[in-house]
Length: 203
Image: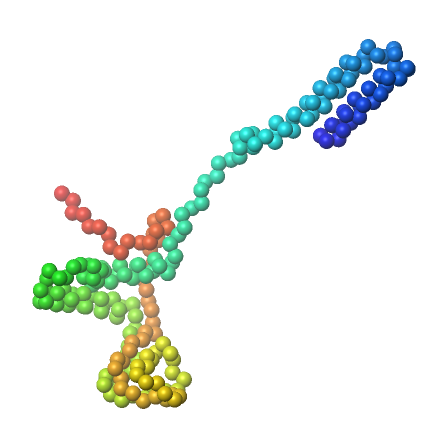
C-alpha cells in the first residue's frame, strides 16, 4: 500500500510537470481531470488503512475471553482441613473446643472430655503410629547423647559444655514413623472442604 501511495504522488508530480511544458498544449484539457483522479486515488489510499486500523474496529473484532479461573486451595491446607474433619466426626473435637464450657460444671465437662478423648485417640491410632521418644519414666535421670536431633529434644535449664548431657526427664516426647491419611476428596470451586456439614432435620 505504501508503494502504491508513493507511485500516485509521483504521477501527480509528473502530470503537473508535464502541464507546464509547451509540448503538453494539446493534452492540457485532460491534465486537470487526470490530476483530480490521481489525487482522489491517493486520498482513498490514505483513508483506507486508517479505517482498517481504527481502535473501534479492533475492539469489535476482539473475541470475548473468559476470566481466569478461581485459584484452587493449596493441597496441604485441604489435607489439614480433611484431617480436622475426621477428628470432628470421630471425637467431636471442634464442637468441644469451639463451645463455651463456662456454663457447664466440672462433671459435665469431664463427661464430654471422655467422649472427645476416646474418639480422637482412636483417630490417632488409626492414621499414625505414635510412640514415645524416651521409654524411661518421667522424673528419672537420662542421658542426651552427642549428635542428638534438635527436634527430638528440648533442653531446659542451664546448658554448659558439649553433649552428652545428663538431666531429669520431664516429658517423654512423642514420635510417629507412619502417616496414613485418607484420600482427599475434591472440593468444589477450588475452596477448602467443610470441616463438618450442617445437619438439617427435614419436617
